[in-house]
Image 1 (cartoon, rainbow, N blue to C red):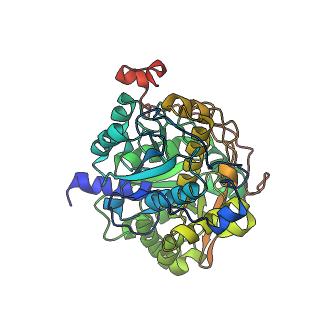
Image 2 (cartoon, rainbow, N blue to C red; image 1 turned 180 degrees about the horizontal axis):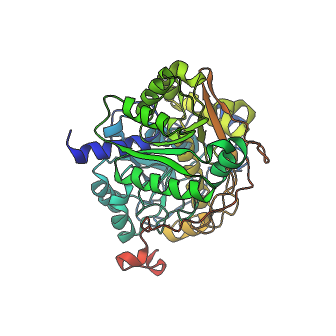
Image 3 (tube, rainbow, N blue to C red; image 1 turned 90 degrees about the vertical axis):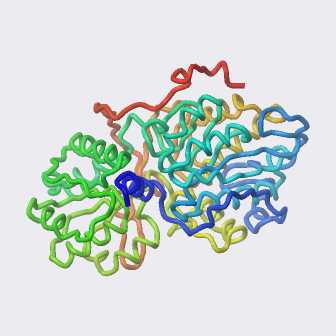
Length: 460
């Protein structure tokens, strides 16, 4: 494996999340018109506490590219051809099937086209989307910054499940549920770790990152954020993107530096191998941040008995935990919809974020009525000051791209499954007393319309 390809593998594994394998084929989803149990329980296209997200109407015009009197074409970006993880395509199928069964968007059916970027083909797929789609929604690509310039040049709005590269994270014409990119999204989590839960670990933190453009930036931001929370970095290292045959030297370095808290940015398969060696050495850390990429059954299978020895944690950034779905109507409704429309697919954390992005797009598009334009759908989404995706998420202010998130929630991995950690939630399943921290380091900036010679006046 050459160095570039290996570097990109790490980036893809970190950004992709964990989901079922898929074919990588481009697919369109229109829905079969059959109501689900959830749709029957929520007539008129209600989802969670959102009323009438989807439903019939009297749309008559072809108001924009990708919009006819009968349909709305939406692109869904995914690295499925590389990662074999089909979670964004699965989520698109579920959402469009449910929404179309309820009547679509003012009577227009949603047509989702998976744009398979295969890791390195982001620009090509963006050019395809620019020619055909009305908007992009519910997806993500590890190297998403490679297509941001093209997206802004063709004035294409984006409602991503999650973002990855600096160029795209918080870029113009994008409405993201993950908060302002200039702020540390883990500020509340870090403060809880170092000041409340494990204060003795503050003087001995380690950071290990995969040697890739994406993970190196994440590692640098983590270091700044941890120091701002009162932490001291005792050990910092990169591991080769081509892989590590023996994690023993890293485990020995962690032990020799007396590391008590570890941040790991890379694929969770590598983390599981590292933890097995640490456990074999009988070296137990106070905590290990496995990050939300590890949240799911795959990491639990890999972790084995180490999960009951090491303390693996993950901040879900305000997404209601899936293992507690029965305690939250919106999450349970999502699980029910997957059981109906994609019974062989796994509901994943990126999938939940993707479904939330679809809801945001659909609600905004419905408000535009017959005159559905890109300017209208983008501006309507920007009016959401306490967006929860019907109850899937903690409230997020979307009125400005630079506003940070206020809430966090922490999960703990055990051999019996993921479960909420004791992080002292103060608002339902979340803790929302985050002391915000704005980065001072130079990590690059997201692209703007001005960077491509455009402005909002050009968006029609």
